[in-house]
Amino acid sequence: MGYKALFLFVPVLTQALKVQTGVSRKDDLEQTISGVIEALGYVFWGLEFHAQGNRSLLRIYIDKDGDAGVTVDDCAEASRQVSAVLDVEDIIAGRYTLEVSSPGWDRPLFNLPHYQANVGEVIELRLRSPHAGRRKFKGLLKAVEGDEIVLESDNEEHVFPFDYIDKANVVPQF
Image (cartoon, rainbow, N blue to C red; front, side):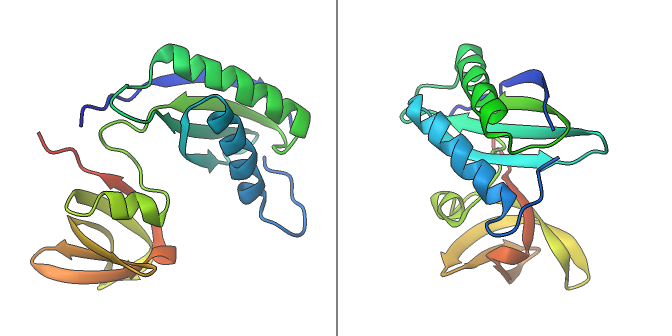
């Protein structure tokens, strides 16, 4: 597959994720943003929210079905629409930068279907806590079994519960 990473940075002023009881604010944010992205005809790939003091970063990944790649204009359109909705919904408190991007060749893996679609690929992952004395692994994604990821790394097979994975990306092979 030929993927390129595109980024569009838009500074936004509003209020870090507001604390509320009930459903996770990240879940609210994902649900709101995915609806906007999908209404525009794009695929919502995922998001990252990094609280950084008084200035946070909201990175949204969009994709397209088929072989058409995401363009800068696609990112700009998605950014405008998401920004407008977030201003109305007021989900994020404080200053933040909104970044809209394609997932790129080293696409992040956010959910089990992402892992399932990339079985047979080399991935890098970072765990929330150490396993076998380390948190970072790189290897062949062998399988997804229920909610566990099977990774062959350093001639050993490791099984990681999905919830233990902090971050994972596909490693492009050229």
